Image: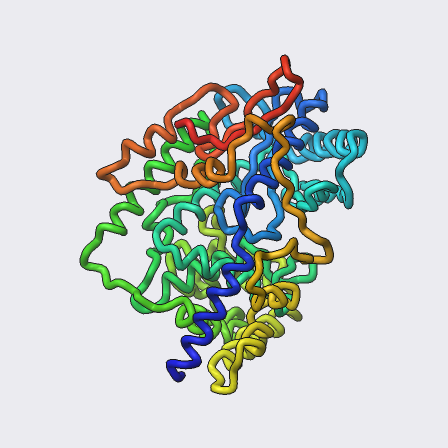
Length: 445
């Protein structure tokens, strides 16, 4: 691989990131949607006292300009973690769906009651943000925070996840509805790559949190979240301060090419081995009692909800196509006959590549069949909402410090009043004197 080709790839990857990384207005737009959804929730009698909590890529800070918004409607349950049954969640989503239709401003509403986690999918008409709403999805919220904390170990993880998502979209293998990867499983593949490259960039996730996060989510919510945050902070700090470990100085282009090479034979390897980010190793399926009997095309264990398979949507027919996408992309990116146009064709969908060469400020992109218009905050309705710079500060307040400065995040995770437990965000109850709903990033801990 010539130095010129490596530099060209590195330059192209950086340009892609400039296009897909969210801008300040993209965060504010999502906060507006959250605000509006809080207003819808407060109009539903069966959801009295419930609060709207974001999770997913928005909370993990792994979202792109066109990323969807995952929302959990958290039911009031005093100081304890709520344990609503599936049937009740389904009924509450039906009530919420009726309220959405009645209030207007939402389109493409689709109720999916029989999913593993019942969800309601829709899109905001004004902001064109797609939303997936579930009930009491604390597992999703904690997984999002854990991914955020992991990304704090090395900034290349954040960039790699965004690049891998766009690459997967370019090859039509980032769509669980059609039997390919979801974005969470792609993030776990990046984690696994960072665990198994030489030298390793990330530790086995058991070294960050020993045990199963999903099993530990019971009891007093503030105490549980504080325990998880403090445990992860101490272990991440210990990993960072380990002066004996070798430092991986690979460039983003080198990491991306080696990522493609590592999984080029994934179709063959998946028949016998599963990917285990918890241990940071390939594990033989036949010797792993948690995974038997094997009924999946590929197994990527969820390290925070063992032994669930994050790639359970991947079909056997699509696994061959996925493996070919890895192999074909690696071959193209290793070829001497490359220019920016051919690189972009391999790395991103056409809707993204059309903006790479523009020297002017980015226009509102057309992506996934719709034009995305970040809207400015309207002072008359959202004057108490955080500014974009304050919104960015919400992520800083989630950061886990080294043991020497743990007092900084202990304030972040101390117990608070009932129904306000999230270590990142909290809904602010409606100001009934003004008749407005407001949601603020939790930056006051």
